[in-house]
Length: 274
Image (cartoon, rainbow, N blue to C red; front, side, top):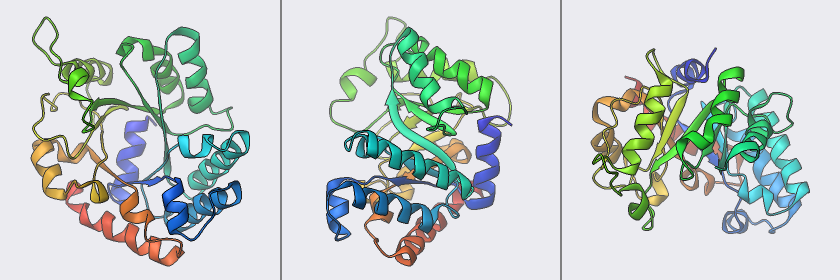
């Protein structure tokens, strides 16, 4: 099965929600933990225990593991393996983007099933050109994985790049979406998605031609709401995958409290598959 097919099946069974695992220092402190390797592992595995069997997609943010060096990456490996064993699709939030053999190596690290870090999909940065991500697309095609490419984000620095106009009048964000749409082709849902924040304000791109999933961060603690999602995506709601992290994670360290917070946000966005 392609990643798009597997994503449709997972969200039909578990609801359309991506739950983040972001063990940054403030959340560790909020859980009464130290900012150290032992706490990193406890945090990550508690999250997997709480919602690995509930969420369609689990999204560990690699930076918060990498900051502990090789031992932190080993925790990430275990987190990925246990989340996948629990039945969740795992999206590694790595935002890789490079050229040639370097991009190929990044792709092999996360999309080759032989890798100890192998996941179902990754996030990628297209600002060396979408074509530079070809090694990731090729490996994703080969192994039924997915790639979510940054298109429209709500950070204040984003518009100078993402809203810039090309000679043909399209925004850079639109060009990213159009290139991925061409790769997705026709069918129920392509395996190449874009990242579009729930707090972007007015969109400067036409989203309807993607035929792929929309990963939508910025919900909950960052201010995005279900109404924002309705406003931005309109007729494309069926392809939306909301992404929530702090809104659920700050309910920890209790497994049951995390589980209840996860159930609440999953239920809040059930309308996306109605």
